Image (cartoon, rainbow, N blue to C red; front, side, top):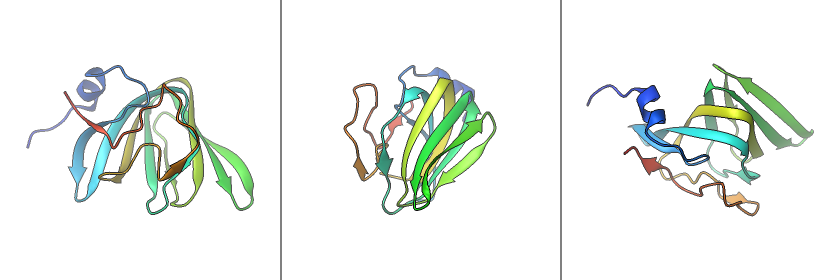
Length: 128
């Protein structure tokens, strides 16, 4: 085991909405991703999803019992989407983020709208 530079990990790829697995903690993946534009409405039925914005700004629209709302995460902010909550991330500017979720969790959740070509439906890719 050696320390992993998040800066180097993020520099190792250019794909948008295509997370890379940096390390694992117990049964959870720590993933980094570069994002810009819209993702897809999706839901994780059995797990929360943790976001940390490393650079840029991330908006997450949520469909909650009280209605739809959007949270804005500037650089350095964290937010957890509760399991069972429909959500749609959007980055108005190039953004780098870290996501923490159980190993094997699909980036487009258990249920989702049609996945656009620019979104990678994956359980994460290994760093190269």
